[in-house]
Image 1: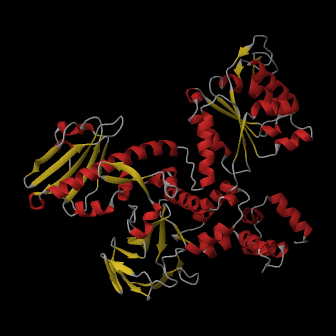
Image 2: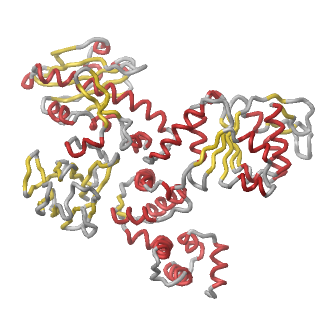
Image 3: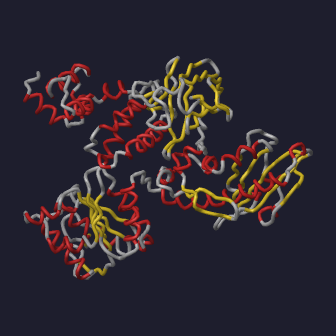
Length: 576
């Protein structure tokens, strides 16, 4: 299947070309709407053919550009590009697994890039601009360093590819290099690391012969803690003049900057904290700062917002990262077992205690103990935990020898602990001990800009598990953005996983697919907007039961409720 690929607001977008004719523009009535003021209401019409598309300008204000010329119409083949206003579109084939990211370097989009880093006479992109910072937190969605390089000086890139092929070799020596990135448009020769001398890691090489008619230029890359070299291969017919050589040197400087930023960001992205919310970035920045202080932290937030991910992020940036990260869910373990989990026991402490057992407090000494759902901890255990935090020692169950610990606590809750204190259900003195600093994670509905980026991430994740590429239409995506997501990121993840699972042989998720599998979404949105075509909740349940042949387990899952709740509602509405 053919589709268009373009890069906007920091991430990759795709437009599947399903119909014979497709209208793209700013108007909501278009087949694909692009909310960008530089795009006309009805900008272009695309007609699909076997091996190409025919693009026609619909008298737009900012025009259609093909091969750097403004045109009224263009025939575009696979992997070719065209531009409307400030956005570059690439025509792709759906069977192609190697989707590349492309940066649009036109003047209209230059405001999205913060060009502040000056190296010699050349400006390079600062990759911490708010519009593309989240790109790194995506763990590149499986993309590698070679994809990142498409962001670097597209004008230089295009001109250099006319001269030859580029390589980046990274490793301790060329003979056992860890990575070879090849970025050439043409294959001049099957490259082998043994084709190059070891010296190229340490000194610049110019006009060195490679094979018969081929030569190479190389220069070491300034990459921290790694030996790396950039190699440019060309033929004698494409001799390197001074201008091209100067461009190469500029290009190499940018590669060094991008790679160093990429390495730093990839390390942070291992936690898969995916966001483009400025507020969430501010929270992460505060968390990173406070992580370095030896104080206890309370993380508050609704179910499914990513509290444990933030706890792991704090741990990875803390002095305690050399120790263990130990977590325990205080609500998932019965009270009599929770005490044993925390404090451990001596041999013979109670029936069944056949050997000594270390508790979580002891195991976490020197590291971080994460107390999830701490608001559900029984009051008697709260008192014992308070004593441990005060005295920094405790006794195993059945023991008489004190165990000294060095503890840092991260407590997590989805409840209002201050209200629980007023109700007498949580100790105020313990609250002051665990909440030296409080971090509140905003729910997904308060950061709607994350819905699209998370949807794309989960689509990529679950599609790759099924070894296929699945797209979501823009109308379906807009529909998901309007949903309130009471279950936050966890609900969104489960929704996308179900949509991918029910996709069958199709590679498109459209609005009809979503409302068919999850009718509650349409019901909730209509109810909130004052409209309800199903009239009431009873009709919704009854219709879903009929659609699923009265399979109550499946109906409950699609409605997002438990089977018990479904039975209660059926009884309430007298559905038999």
